[in-house]
Image (cartoon, rainbow, N blue to C red; front, side, top):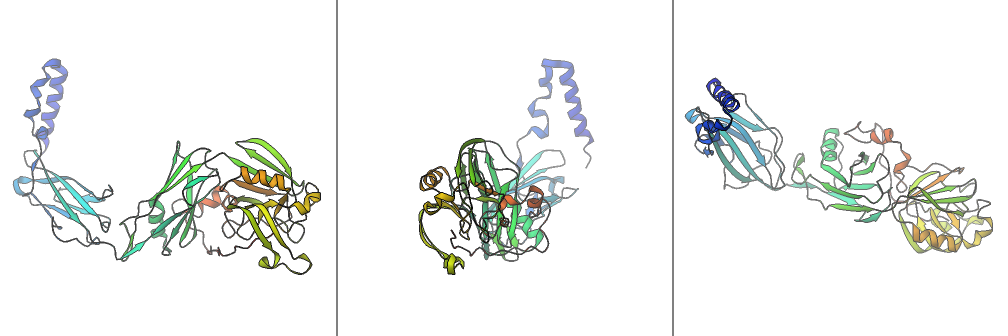
Length: 416
């Protein structure tokens, strides 16, 4: 079928508009077949799925073919599922066949719209709807922390109920986990901490007073053999002020900053030799007005054993590092490091700190003789990786690092 006559008709109309101005109505809506309402093309196309039949196997590709009646051919196909996701497909050069190029989603309804044209160029259309069978096995994603207000350093966590090891599958999963930031987007990335855990953080900290929304687009999507994505609960984080705390273990003072401005400096004591406080940036994990701290819970006994009632305790590691009231060491605060790893201060200062800090705020220790805070096995040490290192944990940006071992999250004991 030649399209030359129709192309010339359109061009001729355009020239007539240019030359006659107001007389352009000579090419009015009813003079050209492309301007007509689509006719019912039910007798011109065929599907390999049947409307009204029982649900179909999502692993079976969708195929649409032109019957050739009246010289018809397919010009476009759109297949959209219950969640508004468009099914990718490929149309042949002749317009006689369209087929899906990715697996269908499970447990959804598809609405398929096929556009055609006959040998005279008149447009036709046919619509079909069908359901797919539910998934046999589901990959569930649970986001954390709980929705609420957090500091600018709070990472987002995605926990999977099944391990994902294959790189291509990880890429599919990672691409479907969507993080939106308002009022403006920021650069950020997921990091595969282990086969079933991902963390997301921006290149820099979250913008103060922004809103972070996290969702999964995996529902119904084929992830592996007999494995499809499950529906997931959306997460919303409201980000507060930019609070940064810097503890200098050499000077024995803490600087508390809010939105770039120094609010106060406080005398403190940190870990003594053999129990030195970890260097690096930690994210506040939680707050407890009262904690009972005992040395034997972290392997400390003998002359170093302690059994203390501790108040105004702000936790920064799972292994028990806190910022807390230490009235027994007030004489050393601002002068010497005498603790077993925590940052101690007077009761009044600890109460003030407790009231002005929140989960997700940043606490950084510098100039300690201790080891560095690890990224993932002792709380949120995510910010101790620079951006290039962080990118290495993404299958979308650089690929998963070779030889990385999953970490143990079981250490929950306090230390003073």
